[in-house]
Length: 110
Image (cartoon, rainbow, N blue to C red; front, side, top):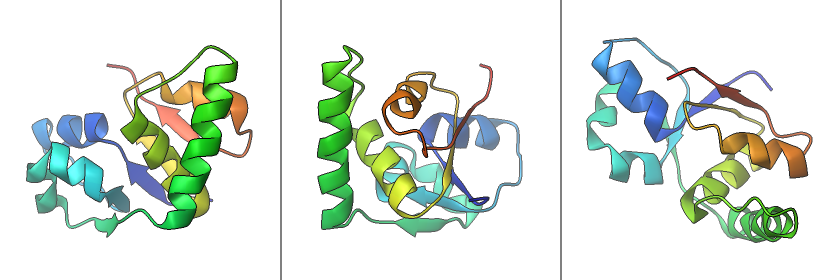
């Protein structure tokens, strides 16, 4: 791994701080925060394989009593299937790491 996929919370933070970021985001993140189009990131759309993995992740999170929002599960699946590291400010992404050891996430402080 090595390339980053930016979650909405990080996109908003980077936008407010006029940071320059490079890498990926998802269509979901752009729908949540359209101003992120200014970053010129590569945009990923979910595939059937992403939804299948998301269902698996969601089921595993439910079993351990740590469900997270559906969109964040799909974003996690997209990151896993594309071998990308999620950059976020939302700590609940750490729960995905508990059920998918190969999931890479960096949670920046708020």
